[in-house]
Length: 324
Image (cartoon, rainbow, N blue to C red; front, top):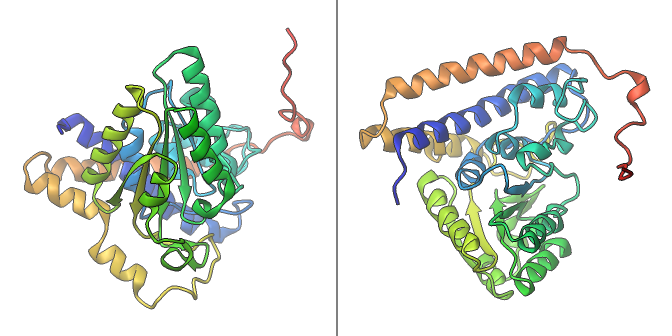
């Protein structure tokens, strides 16, 4: 497996952007200016970035309620995302979707989803379209450990297997389905074996290791583009924040997040590996850190100053009009 310098720089930029975006939202949410619920992706950056690096604008992803990282990794505009989260008219969805329903079809981002497991059927639909039209497009369904116990995901895996659809099912096991530990709630305790029950080849990887996730994602997407049917990846890591902003997280052991940030931070691992192996320099990575911070500061400032949607837009974007 070869990843060139530009790919590594872009991977770090995307992971740092996701981290900074989420850390800043954690602070901004306390001001009361952000409407609705917010679910943060910090700590899970390798999944979105390493998987989406295998994709192009013709490929599609279906996200979760914790979708900011997927949006950024798929190329959605950060300024538009921040405005959307603040409910502004210039947001990606005109301020109507908010955090849980960001979408950008031009980028192949089918949307964050408030329905647990709701992205599986969407990804199957996109993959079926690609197969019928004879393209080499693929689709990715990101979902959490809680969604892996939902019928929608299991039915989607069966449908993809029966029809040999190019769908990559990515289980993002962050340790908790809201407040229920995945170590307790997942029957059989082996997600790869569960996928195998549908005839889908899979792999479990350490989500703290960007390179391991990249390798697994590349192998899976390459196989799918070759017409070998769906694939499955189980990625294990820990989310840094609660299920949602405001979650007291009383279900977590004392010091769990502190230790995770100290000893199992994927961005720290990435920096150590690429600088230790002389693939990138500390100066290059620090420069990206500064650029990303400036970007996020500007995104928040612009979002706060942007206009809210006019009331006359309330009933638009409700129905699709297919008339010619």
